[in-house]
Image (cartoon, rainbow, N blue to C red; front, side, top):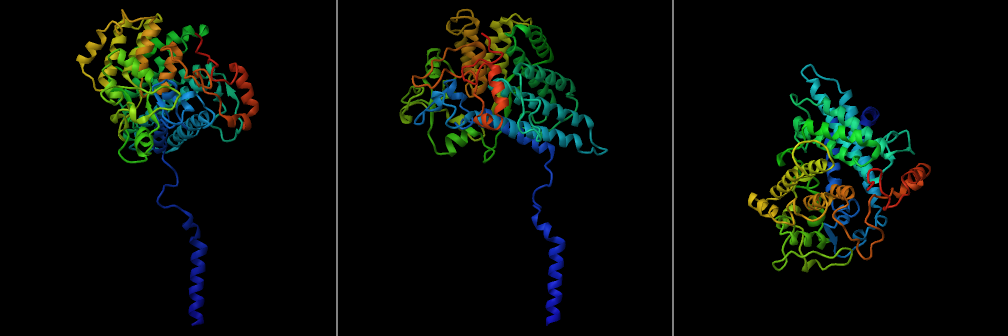
Length: 478
C-alpha cells in the first residue's frame, strides 16, 4: 500500500513539475492578437468616441446645442472638469485607437506571407491603417492644438514632449498623400474586418481624399499656408472625394451589446432620461419648415418642442431624440456626402477652382442630407425653394449660409459640427446664462498631464496662448 502511494505521489509531482505552467495559459484566447483584429478594435473605438453621448466622453452635441440636459446640467454649461472629459477624450484616442493601430501595423508587417498570399493586400491594409491613424490624429489636434506626436506611443518615453499643432497637421497631410498613393483598388484589404467599408479599397480612396479636402480647408486661413492649402484641396478633388450617400463612412453596429450603437446604450439600455433636443436647433428647423425634424426628434402634443440650454428641463413635456437614432443597429456616421458637398461649396467661396458653383454644391449638400435622413426629392424641392434657404436669397454672408445649413446637416455628428462652427463662426450660438465659460473653441489639456508631464504641459500651454477653452487654435484665425 505504501508502495502504491509513493508511485501515485511521484506521478503527481512529475505532472505538477512538467505541466503546472499550462494551467496559467488561456487556451481559449490566442497568445498574440492578429493585426486585423486590432485594426477592427481600433476602428470601433474611434467611431464610438465620436458617436457616444456619454457625458464622461463626448459632450459635443451639448456644446453645439443639438441636445441639452434634463437634470444634471454641468456639461450643457461647458463644465469640462468635474468629469475630466478632456482626459477621457485624450485617452480613448491615444490608448484605444492610435496605440492599437500602431500595434496592428507592426503585427501585419512582421507576419510572414504564405506563397498564396497577395503582398498588395498587405500594402492596402497598411495604407488603410495609416489613413485611420491620420484621421484620429487630426481629431486630437483639432481638439487640443499642440499635442505629443513624435514622442507619443513610445512606451519608453513616459513624459513626451508636445509638438506644434500646425507642424503636426502638415505632416499628417504628407502621410495621407503617401497612403493614398499606396492604395490599389484592384486588390483586396481587410474584408469584413473593416466595419466602415468592408475592405473596399476604392471607397477608402474616396474617404482619404475627402479627409484631405477637409484638412486643406482647415488650414486655408493661415497666411503662411496658402500654397499648401490650395495644393491639398485641388489634389483631393482631382483624386475623387465621396460622391454619394452610398459612399458615406458609416460604421455597422450590431443588435447585441457590446457592439450596439453607443447612443442606444446611453439613451435606452441605461434606463436613463438625461437629454432632450435643444430649442436652439428645434426652433431653427421649425422656422425653416425643415423636413428632417421628424427624423431628428419626436413630437410632443403634435409639436416639436426643445429644451432650454443649461437649465433643468422637464423630460416628459418636451420632444425627444427620434426613435430611429436610438436603435441598437443605427449606423455610426463619421464622414458623409453632405459634408463633402458643403466643403466643396466653401472651397469655391474661398476661390479654389474645383468646378461647379457654391450654389450647386450647397444644394447638393442639403439634398444629400435630406435624403440620408429619409426625406424625398419633393421635400428637397420645397425646402430649397424657400427664400430663407435658397443660396441666392438666404440672409448673411456665405459663411452664415453654409455654416447654418451645415450645422443642421451635421446633427448627430457633434465633433465635426464643432470644428465646422469654429471654422465658419456660424451659426451664432448664445452661451447658457450659467455657463462657466465662453462656448469652448478647444478642450483644455487633461489634468493628469499637469502632474505627470508638467514641464512639457507648461511649455505647450504657453506656446498656444494659454490652456483655456477660449484659446483659439492655430487654424482658427478669424
